[in-house]
Image 1 (cartoon, rainbow, N blue to C red):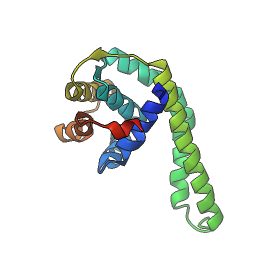
Image 2: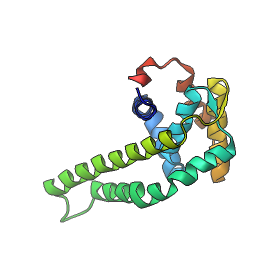
Image 3: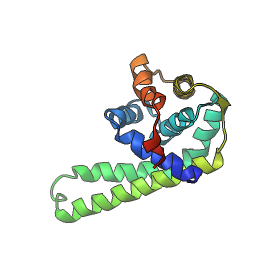
Image 4: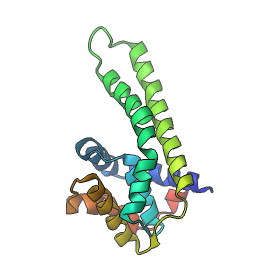
Length: 168
């Protein structure tokens, strides 16, 4: 399995775990964190890779224009179409929203593939738990936001278990 496939599979399986999507979206909407960067940092931690703040900054800078120009506009359209108001509440609008949702997911996958290809062996070796918490805390510090201990624990806890299903 390629590095990009490994990252995507990790992300899909991690995001499906109970409570993980909710916390990722809350951090995205409430603290401006990029879910794909969060997942990248957790994927790296699951591989026992602890990144420096400079390395995390490089990842954030690398994806910024794609995120701002492609992912966020698609997300904005999809969210608007969720409740567009009358007279826009039609089956055609619902079908259009589903198409936009698929395109947003594709844009996120493209972002993840680019991240995995551009940063295949970043970071230092470390323990999974330490790497997860450090990667997340440094990302928050870079964005000048705070993560609570509960948020750190909730995000990092799944990385501590063996996740053969993440590789599928």
